[in-house]
Image 1 (tube, rainbow, N blue to C red):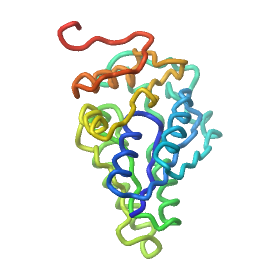
Image 2: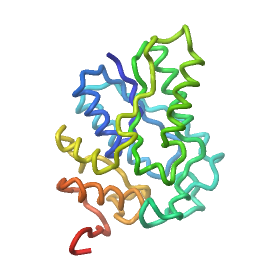
Image 3: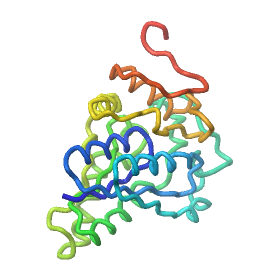
Image 4: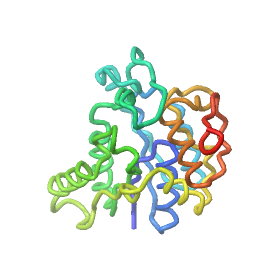
Length: 230
């Protein structure tokens, strides 16, 4: 079995990579440079590709960055919002059509390499803010891509999103079982030397570890407190 995995370097996609490897897939990790301000995540993806012994390619589409206006991740004029993902301010982190772009390119690689799945780590915590992480989008994209390459792909090739209907806490729990060294992953949208601890990605990351009972060894500039001490 072969998997083309879209891997950013964050905790979700790195857990996915570990899960695919544990499940016996021949793993080809693909990371995208789309001009995101948190390019540090690419270094994380490269590190884990070596750890897992996986083929890894960074696809540079950064020339699209100036055209993706209005997102805090690609537009320097938009400040990265702080708070929880459930807050409306987090809509500022939506990158126009990001998952459709990435999945389409990964699908092309999968067809060329006769892979069985294109895997990505979207989860239910993304559904509120990111429409391209919702089941309806993933199902529709899967159907369209399969039709588009009918007769030219592995018969069973499909989008594989094992965490689609679970939250980030469940991902953290799975990663604990798999032995993922989460302190080596990169989540923060601000892309500083250490995680800021305050952006939506950092807050949700810390909350996931708390809910899963996973020890968080990640250094944060401003760590959040959950539970009784909150």
